[in-house]
Image (tube, rainbow, N blue to C red):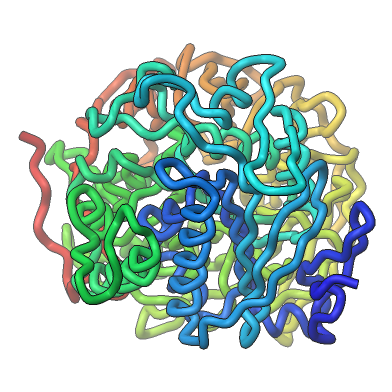
Length: 640
């Protein structure tokens, strides 16, 4: 029996291909041991994670998360097998340092999917595991501008890649994807972290330190992970990290974060003979690595909608997480300028009103913590504050009025919070009744009595609701009769005081509508005959009718459904739409197709849509740690 089979009593033992593998189970004991978070990290080389994914990795480890890291390549270039072993020692030293534990590891061999993987488990904290596929990693030509074995297997049909160590394995692209998908299913992560799959430069045209260029193994590893996630969907956050091109962007880490990231990388570099000769004479991080340890940027998918909102004086703004600065950004429609509000997030934002009409914002950082801010005065935003409680898988969904929010925690439960009076804070997350096999996200609306109702589905597509009762407890989840859905949930209180619920039919992928009647009854689902992706945007129009905006296909048309009439508003859009009504006027925002992050703001006048603004891209800088933001953020960034 392998060492893996002799591990501690709270580890899950799985027999795969005749070998015993270690993976964390979903039991309460394991969830407690992982503090509710299990990170799966996949990179090309040993040090990609340390240079491009920190400080998020160290923050998660310090918060008690479990972490499974898979290095795809042997990273042996310029040194062979012995160099590979030394680099593996280096990453073990770095992770032991991040965990604050003795650098002692237990080695095992396991089968996952089609591959045999070497795995090291930190003895004093077995939730931290480093795994190595050890794919050979030479250049297949003279160097940059050549393929590597991994990038060739990823991009050239019929090609394979071999491992460096014994037993020798030969894997093709499909087997690599299957292996990654099998790891996702077995480990059941709450976050999957990978490198940038969006780099448009062909592998054979990449060059060292050219503007915007990455490494072929980085890009290939990320594309394989993205495909594996499609094959193994689940309730986990997906976080991509920009690699080499971060050296071209503004420094966005604090001095404390830079110092921590530097010390972690040095623990690795002491073992890498091409980086330094040991602790006494090591100058690392130096060269480009010195730039990388000062920065951390997320891959943007450009499909997140903007969030429209007005202030208490009726002034319209919209908000977007920056594709270049990762910050929260506010566009002043009247002044035609951006204000960066700090923070560092890989996700969309949620905007809402407090009961006094002042605007507020939710953002989620890459470790799952939810932060909020409020604007008490025009262009003034208070420092970001964290909602206490568990970590969340996504930015909360929030009601437009009375500040009620819902999100799924890393434990698979839905949580609710509401704004407090009179301090404008948010209460700690409250767990809702358990919904077996729940799928995120949920949606929240208030009924005519002001009670929050929350709607969600499970992985089988069944639709459920719960609501807050008069004693402030939550009703057990109740089934809503509807065909199986594939998400796309949205809800709104109509002018007659009834909640309307919208969802995507799993079979036809078409928009369905249900309307709540008395005694929690619902109308039969009405098929609105419109296929769409993402989540519908909902608003009341100028005459208090519910209007729905959807995107038909990724990058495709934006279509408005108003009183049964379907109208195409935009032929192409990079993002889902956002709708908002202000002073009897309906507004719609979309992001045009193109490399620059611009937004179109349309206003409906006498039944016709008129463009009233086209933004400049958000500023290249302005992102920073949520926890070290200034008390007030007042300085605007004016586009040159």
